[in-house]
Length: 319
Ligand code: ADP
Ligand code: MG
Image 1: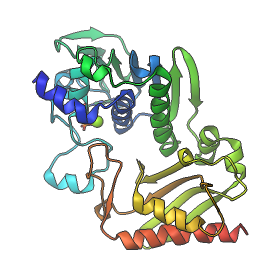
Image 2 (image 1 turned 45 degrees about the vertical axis):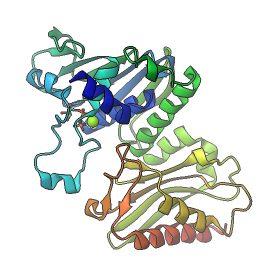
Image 3 (image 1 turned 60 degrees about the vertical axis):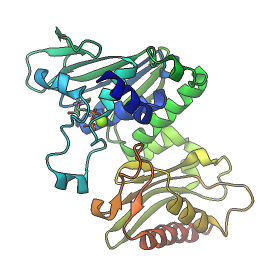
Image 4 (image 1 turned 90 degrees about the vertical axis):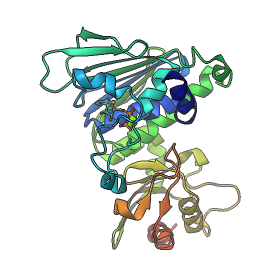
């Protein structure tokens, strides 16, 4: 019911950027090739995500807004190796409890689209070529106590931009666009990883970075790590992905700091965009609702692997 969902929303929907995270991940999970994000007023006034993915059948639209309704787990066994981003089936329920939410979607093969209104769950025919449009307006309009905790438009926008960057860095194979208050901020064609990294981190980063490519048993690390000559690095320029999922993890941050220990001094930070791939059974991503922290089965081995891979890459370059 609404109250339960509003309470659940506290965990999932901390701010506009957390709405954007969930809705973007759904678009990725739907097998989209292109995703467009439109924000108004830092995402507080509106977050609209349009995709060209598989869409949602008419009869599943109401279900998508129910708590614990997920199409992504067929059995308990699946929980062990979740390949998709979302799997808790509560994001849309939580979001629609605290914002004016509509979903317009045309399932593959359907003759036209349907639109559901999150308030009264009414369904009406709609026009859409393909995919899904999730529109989330007036966040916290019905929970003023929460609304008070929202920061300025520019701060909320910055968090949304960061969330967009994480997905865009992880998925260079998808065309992605972000606009804010009608102005296009990022227009990213689908393509190679290095072009995506240059578009989001700057050509300067790429010019002062080494490509990382390491394999060790079930572990694989790829991406880019900055050389000491790169001077603009801040902690905001540190991106680490595990199996395509952005994480900020103490163990990994430590391994990176150690790898740079001999070449970066004082308060300077490395910059990196790194992708670790491993058997999903070897990592638990279900530690926290925000799914940013992780637990490794073989944490020592992971730490050593990342540390050596980055240190070796930097040493080869003569850094
Ligand atoms: P979860 O992602 O954990 O399954 P959500 O509440 O985020 O839960 O979404 C509920 C369901 O709605 C999903 O399992 C999926 O079936 C459907 N859905 C949501 N967004 C999309 C989308 N953009 N394209 C296709 N299906 C979607
Ligand atoms: Mg989801």
